[in-house]
Amino acid sequence: MIIDKLRIQKNISDEDFDAIYPFEIRELSERHWTSVFVSKTASEFLCSERPVKVLDIGSGAGKFCFVSAALHPTSEFHGIDIRENFIHISNQLKEQYLIPNVSFFQQDVLQMDLSGYDGIYFFNSFQEKIDPTSSIDHTSQVSVEQYIEYTKHIFNELNKVPRGTKLVTYFSEGFCVPNSFRLLATHFDGELKFYLKDLEPHEYNLLLNEQDIADHIDKHTFLS
Ligand SMILES: C[S@@+](CC[C@H](N)C(=O)[O-])C[C@H]1O[C@@H](n2cnc3c(N)ncnc32)[C@H](O)[C@@H]1O
Image (cartoon, rainbow, N blue to C red):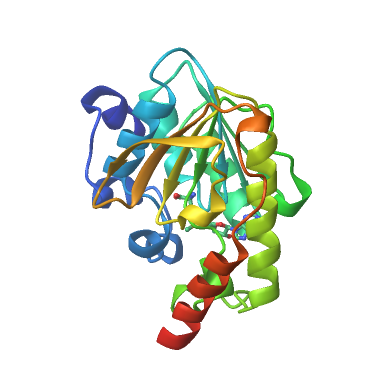
């Protein structure tokens, strides 16, 4: 059993792990799901001190949550995703592989407040809105307005979470993260970033840098 193997060996290949998925989900893995090794590195930071509750914003087919939950059985991992089919398959696999410490919910992150978690994981969930090469399925649609709306929501919600909340971003632009979070470490050529929320509200700037977003969008529109 793949999940048991991961629990015991603490690392397995992505090819081995992805065998739990049907072909059409496996096909998306290399580009859209966090690898086993990156999930292990991220979850070691998120779960380093005590049992914690972690949210994966845009959990896809649940790969980050499953790997992290197998490696950290006393912590809890919640995944939310806008796509019903991804939540359906994640819940099926949770039952099939008997992984009690994961939960998945279909939700648009715009409807969520992010408080109530000790740790948050964010792997660039909105790239499909500005980059046609990041398309996930036939529902992917480019919309710069929505990209800005989603990014502002994440930024504002992160500003509200309590001090002590940990955040890991992967392939995500720094402008999503308010400067109430301190960057503690980076891995994988700077693409995986570990942050800790540690400033009081009067110590930081609450405003998102709109010019940085505009520059980022221009870069992608130009490249695609
Ligand atoms: C790059 S994948 C990451 C998957 C997963 N976190 C992992 O690392 O294995 C981004 C996911 O975000 C989801 N997503 C996009 N927009 C969303 C939204 N507004 N609310 C919730 N999920 C969203 C997509 O459906 C996709 O599954």
